[in-house]
Length: 330
Image 1 (cartoon, rainbow, N blue to C red):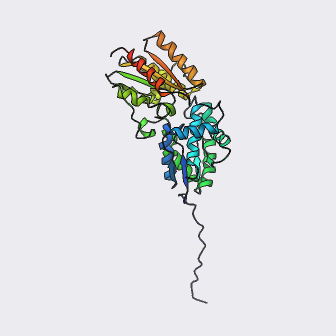
Image 2 (image 1 turned 180 degrees about the horizontal axis):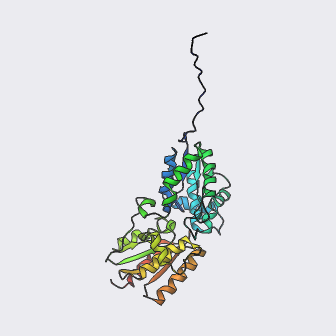
């Protein structure tokens, strides 16, 4: 009609949701969870996902994991398999990051590079697994690609996933310990009190079941306990010289070397205990480097405790007691 204004209602395109609808993501309390689980939990929470974390390691979880894996599989991976099985039916997908490196010139343990595939194969695809590749040494291209795949799977935009990763994870992989470790992991500080440094992979020394509560037993004996996380990432790298000097080295190796070498300079550190899973290739090298360093300088007592699924707690405790008896007073 003449003189009338006609309004045309344009169809509005729905905006891609920034929040995932009714998605529950499982996080296994094993492997890198002890370093970065808190970061990934924040990542998924920012995307609107519910997060389900498996319980602390126990005998059932260990036995279930052992039953799924070959004898040659290392103990932490067997435990990881048990934790993923524990999450079956409780979540839509289990998230397992594929760590290649977390800093320039540092390499992650080979089992972390292939962990999602190892768990898929060992569990015969009984549980849906989602991954993100983390490779700080080679760049962020693979990370962005896998974040896009994750975003499509859980129903959020790629931009949202990348923003959440950059805010919750990217710059905190080697940040201060309080930004990474779970709140219930109490890390001591270097004081004048007699101190023992407990070294090893975080998923060994912080898992109370796998470590047979080593840190708790030392504290019960009135010993101050420190771990590599008492030092900053920069300080650990600095003290690991010359094994880390602008050339690639294993991240866990530089962490433990740097901590051991730094502790050797501190008179309050009366001894060092290195907890290692049986047949760990990286630890076999690192413990040898530490042993030689201590013999060449201040002779700090060093005990290497190797454990597997057959290790008995009685013998384990006897070795700890004997080690503490030989420590000189501070």
